[in-house]
Length: 398
Image 1 (cartoon, rainbow, N blue to C red):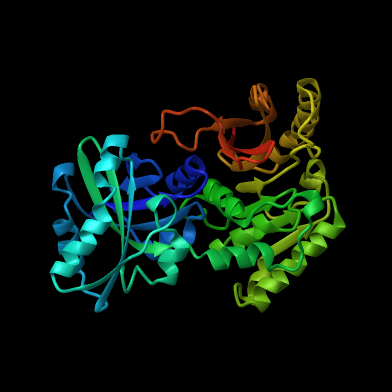
Image 2: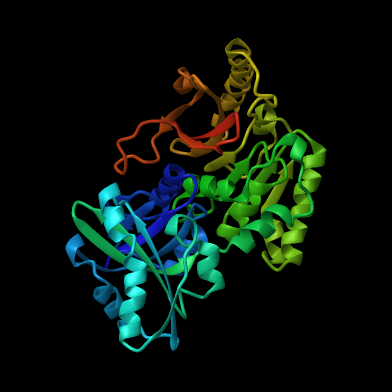
């Protein structure tokens, strides 16, 4: 059976995260819809695990686009009887302009078809005809209704039903509900932290492994790693005692919220040291995984010259050139380091941090989408109104 993921607002990063966790060949893409033929599939596990996936589910059937009819969709609904009154949503991905025009009335036609079969029906929709994960959850469409996800490509239609959606409230609670948040130093979103941890660790950590965040700030990376992997040993380090104290406060809050058992606190070690000095203060063997935000440069106003931006980028580069050899000294060959580097967004294009001498510093850059995408462009985490984007970089110790 085939299955699908609906990728979130950062689709290339979301796909890279899925690649780290899901085995199998490259998925078929229908815009943000990715269709898999994975041998192992656990919808609850994958939805809880993948921060960049907002919906997922099962492909019910695949037909020529000319056979994508209201009667076929009504048959699928009748094959999965649920509530007496039928609620459904329907979202289409990958359709070209002419195909989209042809299919735009499909939900209304399905509603009419169901009424002719004596059903009480309500069609629910949203922006651009697509229903959001929050609406699917609120209306219980995965259990009491139907959320159709349809992918169109090469004259064929794949018809899926959503089985799980992302828990937006849980993510918001961990982001905005935690007691310590320091906007002045910049805050790594929990979803991005989770995606970076998945890129580093993959499906399961190596036995007796340790994950380190050498610039831990408010502890977001360590929090997400602790929630994901009960056996993983964790180390959070920062040069600022305020950040370490805030991280510890956030972990106590996780326990109070019953999100983490109290005994988990015993597998976390905190260090107040700069990254370049950590090797002299670490115990317990090599660090298999390092995941960190790092320094993205001084805050931007949006009116900086290219010369000024290049100067700031050099400041960031100097920090990484000093830090990477020290981090390499902590890791075994094959160890993973996932970090963020700054990318400045200009009307003329992008200014990326270039580390041409990366192998001299102990690492090589990996492509987290290898075999799944021919696009070799950097993977960015960005928003339209921001001048600074985060480039997600996966390094391997050599």
